[in-house]
Length: 615
Image (cartoon, rainbow, N blue to C red):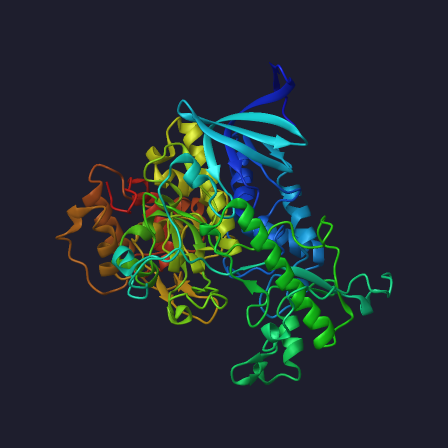
């Protein structure tokens, strides 16, 4: 813990002790985004504090119990990749995490929290657990936050404030404009959006973790793991949990076992987060007071308890007890799984069109986090929701623009969770755990860069933030076939981020893809066309469809840099990690061209606007 400056304020009614702290960056919310933001900024040498209301880190990953990772299996970007590797080390490899059919990576929430706390135990990062903020206000160009912890009041002053809460709690408090609920078609331009906007949010879920006690002889074979029948229990609410509309699930021996194995975790545990006549629950929290929301969340708990009662008693799985996974009296997670938040009105606004057709726009150039999960919304429990065929909105893998993390109007304030500037429909893809970890890492890199450069986040160079992320093994482009272990990883990511070399995106089941094809030969015309936005003097250069060779590269270099030595030596190739021999007739592939373009022309250093236009 950092040393705190103690200020004592006397009142007629007694004495209140207030501890004051100063940091560069203050993060409210130690969920997936907040934890990742704190780790990244602290690693960059910035003093950071996280204020977290629970005793755990990880939010939806851990404190909400959603410990089955959705997406990004082939894109282990940055901190997400580190977290996954530590899970593999803990459990004994990748196969040990593939216990349920919903995901390649499943784990016990308590283990996830332990790993995140170990990752966050680093210099420059202070975490206040069991701490609840009570006041947020401007302090000059910075911020002053008051919070309560262990019945004491503390104050922290920070230059930059990050909202990493699960539902975008700070947005109305700091005066940031935001969107909430379903957007109108006229606002987003999305053909899939409803005609009229509304405040409807996705169903939330109160998860429970069950444990197979028949395989754990240490547990007492009494009834302490069997739940009581809730007061308003209705078995009909769960009657189709083991079925699809066309009958038993997948034609399996037991549809109920398929339902349970959906979220099967290591060590014979089960994550109960089941959408099909399961424990999704609608809470219209945008229209509720804080007390009303808490009352509805208790109803959500009761509904999940009813689901578990149904599993244990109606379906006969009495050997599945409620596990003592969380440090709570009722054995429920500390928070619900909120799938949706207030979404800030940012410098940029990411819509379905950007995801479907990235190269029709330039926003992809500003990417700082990647995702491949399809657009997935949960609205079964609210019959008033306009019907949108979310599952048939086909998008490739995608990236999230930096401008979605930066409000259009409030300075020195950044968002780092499900509260980024995206449309309601796009939130169905960007809300998933690996994407939010990436968003948080980008928010941390942005805040740290702002402090280092003594600039506001709204003034910072997008390329500088992207380079900081690349140096941290994070992806800025969603390339499935460009691995971090490749020595040309950053060069290929940068060339993808400039658009000099474009990739091919496809929709593929529950893991969409974008392929860079590093070994594909580049034509003269393709390279010239990609360079033109950065070097318009190449307009009249003749370029054929033939494979790109060194003589053509040299001729382009001479045109762009007439006074520079354009010769490429074998030592250059070696320094750039390419030991093979090249001659004038060798046709160059996309990996090689990425290295050459990055080293010799470096279009990535040219500044771009928030929407990706070259300045």
